Length: 196
Image (cartoon, rainbow, N blue to C red):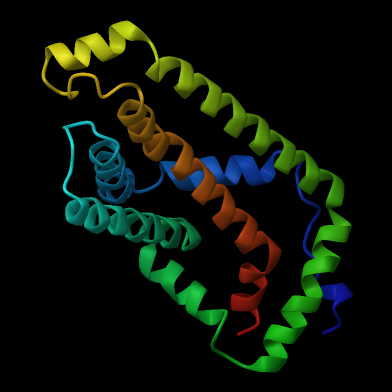
């Protein structure tokens, strides 16, 4: 099979964004097991429950990427973490000839759908910027901080950083990881697993 005949159907102008959203909505409970701990740890690290010992800070900070890696594998496997792990491992294992063919396939795939791919990237970047600005404004609202302090959920004078860190890891990071997984699958992983 030639590289040209390996090309897929044309990419839709919002297909990657749509697929990313669909994957994020699958197996919500499993996803929650990865998202909430990372968000809560980020909240603690940024002073949400008060000052931390340096040793605790280092240990907790190490846990966040672990949960986020598990979440990425969950998305990479299309809401199946074991399948995602298998797909990730397939990058390093397998026949070198197959991997070389897939690497040659990537520029062909992008060239055939570069305008829709660019549009998908622009939509994604606009979403990320919008969420960043929105969460920054929300977390800095005085009444939000006062409400959380009143219910002893936020350490006094902790500021907006813990609130922002929590929602960033709850919303922005999962969206970014799901989009990255969809792009990775579209670029080469689907084809790599197809020709194994």
